[in-house]
Image (cartoon, rainbow over all chains, first blue to last red; front, side, top):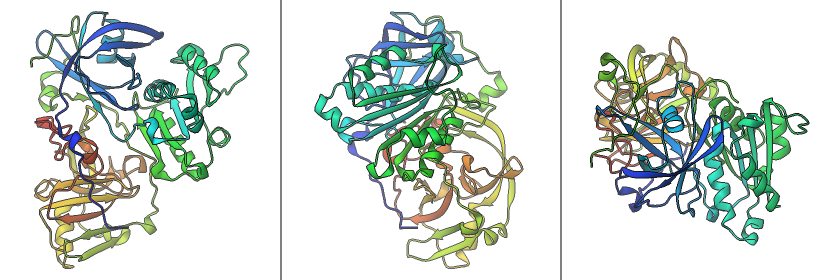
Amino acid sequence: MDEVAATPTSPSLSLPIAWRIATVLEIIVETPRVRTLVLDVPGWPGHRAGQHVDVRLTAEDGYQTERSYSIASAPESVHLSLTIERLEDGEVSSYLVDVLQVGDKLELRGPIGGHFAWSISDGGPLMLVGGGSGIVPLMAMLRQRTFASADVRRAIPARLLYSSRSWAELIYRDELARLAAADDTLQVTHTITREPPSGWQGFHRRIDAAMLAELVWPPSTRPHLFVCGPTSLVEMVAEGLVALGHEPTSVRTERFGPTGAAP
Amino acid sequence: MTSPISRGFRGRRPDTGIAMKLPPGQYETHEFPVLSAGPTPRTPLDRWSFTLAGTDGNKASWSWTEFEALPHETITRDIHCVTKWSKFDTVWTGVSVDAIIEAGAAKGVRPAQFIVAACDGGYTTNLPLADVTGGKAWVAVGFDGKPLHPEHGGPARLLVPHLYFWKSAKWVREIHFRDHDEPGFWEGLGYHMRGDPWKEQRYTGDE
């Protein structure tokens, strides 16, 4: 192996990431178990699509607990949005989905994560593969892309392959349909793994090598590859992309949510 | 700044015994989550080697068979990931970094104050020598009595349980001694240079 190179820390990263108090402005019901929290965060320093925040809850007796959530909103958006899936037995997610109300305060800090992030200036083509709540950071990337001109979007085509258990659990379903309908440089492909809607003509199985071969641009186009979701999906897709000839270092992965079965 | 009370949040407090073992901001998991920045490298054992490199260019290398001949031990430790999960009483088998340094000294490799661990796939992380010596670190080849699975860093990973688990570099292949502390992969992207979970040193500038 080559001699290990030093990675200098950029000056802008040396500031402490401060805890901030956000106010919940709006709560959007995305699916039965998923909510988007639209937040006012005074002093928010900005972020890149793909990054996340740490959220900290404090009970009256001082007990605290923290979790991380991907930022759903584009950097250009006025307010910060987080999309939260209520996990079975989730201590924090059940509070954020079932208890939190408009007007409540939420303590958070960020943005965090410098690897699983994309800006329009990074270029494309942009290939996004997600499963379940893994769509959240990918949606921030697609939302940022809408702020670019038609010329820029034509130069940076994007494709999303999104795996969900059912039509009802497909997060951002309507917005994705609108984005794809309005933009012929964006292609959205769904696969529903369990209960497809009646008359469904699309993919009805977990993401596999054949699906990737059909939908992913060839390695020669050097696409930016982002994969996010449960570990089994990410593992399969990352391996599949490498098997198709993509450079391993060009495949960026983020795994979260419950480990175990993919959607 | 005192944290605001989260209206209506009751939380699920761990019992006292567990609470004492949890660093600030962590919660206990019984799973073993897999997190990584990219695809899982898979290096066959007949192509695997481990190298210790000094600041003067001296190197010592071990093939898999030679590495297996180094003294192994089994240890049980709690581990803490910066993404907030902690897992207690994890059982590992491996060679202590102390033993590797001793074996390297016999081949002319002298330690320095810092190390950079380099891995298949390009991952790196940095540590002070003091954090990997004195029985604090291992190159682990087994988990829970079985060979370490590639998803969890196999064939071998660095294991430094007293620091956040990003320092326990998966797929480790080389340890380079350095005279200065040089940020590795996550450290260069905003994560803390040292990463002590008991001081909640998650990100650059924390504490």
